Length: 179
Image (cartoon, rainbow, N blue to C red; front, top):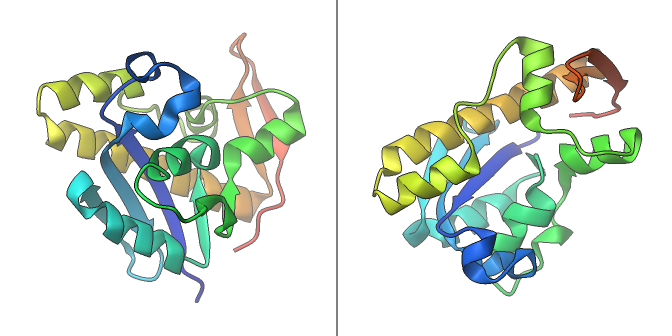
């Protein structure tokens, strides 16, 4: 059985606080979450455990995320010299953008496909970090990982996803993802 690791992280600082989107690695990780198919469970990593998170990602047969190559990996590049973009990955945002010619949010897919919505956003997670509310960040990030896993598994099984466009219409897009 392949070990697919679904992954997301939240940051300590916003792009504005670090001087722009060209300095993503300076945002620092507040908390990262994975779901591993090998262990059939979630794991939550605080910043002190970032090396454990990096090891888990390295050992995965496939890392699946939503904008993790451009964003989450870049945050982690602030902690390692390893080029995480060399890991076997499926960034669903990149794949869908290539097919559609525009970006989609995870929320637009989860809502149209499952009737589920994200429980917050990155700005809320930043506020929780400032307030020391790590449990709230963990719950939010775990749910994002769960949505990522659901979307990926649905795409693998059905070979398509549904999404809401900016006008609220539900559309579909074909995907060719394999386990």
